[in-house]
Image 1 (cartoon, rainbow, N blue to C red):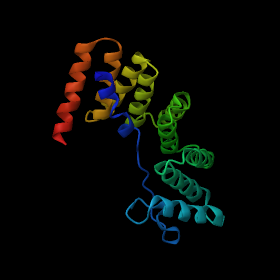
Image 2: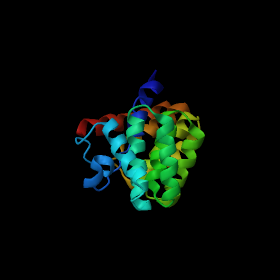
Image 3: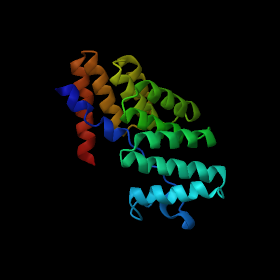
Image 4: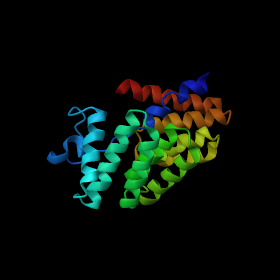
Length: 196
């Protein structure tokens, strides 16, 4: 019961939003202002941008990633995954793209591919606390408590206010049957949540 309560925030942790500069020609295809259009409108405007063949590879990667996020929000995971793969192919040095792909793999419980994507994001950006935290959650799902603890401790060193990492530690220690330590971390999560 407690373990399932601790995991209730996993999906919240596994969502991270892109913020791209607005493009007047393609609406919110590359905009961080989500109030402009619905996900379906975003998919349409990004498709127009992608099919125009007039944008740079960087803009194309952004358009693919933005459309992938819209596809993900509408439950079209296969389309989202293909767009993330295409975006990564265009921009292999962008840790956010690997992070987003990892989040999508995690959402569909493909833990092996999620780990690979988070590994690459962290390799490209070792200070990526959110990627470390999400990788911690994947290790927890796979019952790899020691690896989860290592990742969450690194994430907390980078961002001591990252409640998701504290929650990840609580889950890992719970799985190791170190209940008093799990309770300490879960109490810290509750304390931090009250501050917000």
